[in-house]
Length: 493
Ligand code: NAP
View 1 (cartoon, rainbow, N blue to C red):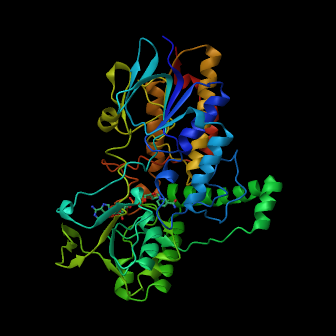
View 2 (cartoon, rainbow, N blue to C red):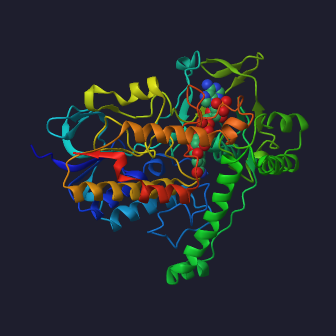
View 3 (cartoon, rainbow, N blue to C red):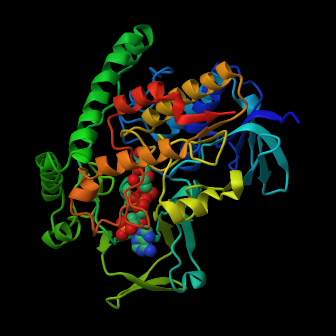
């Protein structure tokens, strides 16, 4: 039976679009790109809270093969990323393959017909020769179940479901969380609300943000002489690579780099926040790099505002109009903002049920046998599956370096498949185990194992305490491996 599609791609963000571009180049035209949201762009469609911007310079945070000369700032606002995603979909004619409002529930490998059967929430089934999951790392919002929250009569907004029409003017607002999202949002709410209480459980390392508008003359130069933008990208890539390889992956050998970064963040805090007690409460007690640090020139200063209060006592319960903390404080509020992040390790990895050969359930297998994926993309017993958001797949600091490595892996793997005239590929157990052993050993030098991370509550760590997200190599190594891995690491049939 011929499957309906060459490939079913779950997710219409930058990962799914990159996979679609690679598949089209390889001659696979019958694609179905499914997304549960009502438009494309993934993270950059879902997130539109005030203050949203990239935290990787925009010359790097884009596909290398599709540079955008028109970024307005060094760190572009979120809305420009959404526009860039639309531009990519139009340029590569991807929209005709996309369907929105389609939530994929499960995918089953059919070992007789050699295809995947995908089932949606609405009960529809689709068949595809290949299955590509591009569901993102930070895509399952985390909403803590605080006692009494159901009785809270005010407004609750999670940052991933931002209500653009909500007006904080005259309101008593509260925000739970002090991650990268909250750091961008807190100054914006403080500027609008009458009162803002920030509920912090774990402080975050924040360094100053060197950001500026890119003058039109430079944008014109980038457009007319693309080599100049490529040069800017190379310089920024080299800086990011240095930070990643030295500061994160070789922490044991180069602790000084982390110490300097922490000192810079402490100095930034000292000059920004007037009250000593507030400074102390905002100072992290874990090593720089254990969880994703962030940049801001506004975040710390917001705590000098008379309308902004930092609350570090833990949340005990909610009442209809207030939050009660363990120290007995009752904070009356009108609107509660949940900047409580995402659940990676329970409800993601994978984001849908995937059943491979021999009835292997990917989610259950990962939880029982360690999170693992060969080169962060394929898994034994899952033929013709490309799982883009896999353990140890995240390469470098910009998501685009991950995507482009995975596109290279797809080109080599699927190129070999068609050269052999084979129907299926499946990574061998040996290759998968060797990769897992290799990354496990390499991570031993990283800040995650060499640093003091126990109090960081970082989403880089899974429920077993393993830092199973980042690939512990340079991005150039990752790209090289993606284009040169031994094809004998796969069985083709
Ligand atoms: P996050 O880093 O996971 O932060 C979630 C926050 O909510 C943390 O402060 C966490 O405290 C708090 N929290 C969660 N459950 C809680 C509970 N039960 N009680 C009290 N506090 C609770 O999520 P995020 O800020 O959304 O950022 C996630 C990632 O998205 C970032 O690391 C970054 O990679 C990405 N991001 C990027 C950008 C950008 O590029 N510009 C912007 C925003 C986000 P604990 O730390 O104590 O758990």
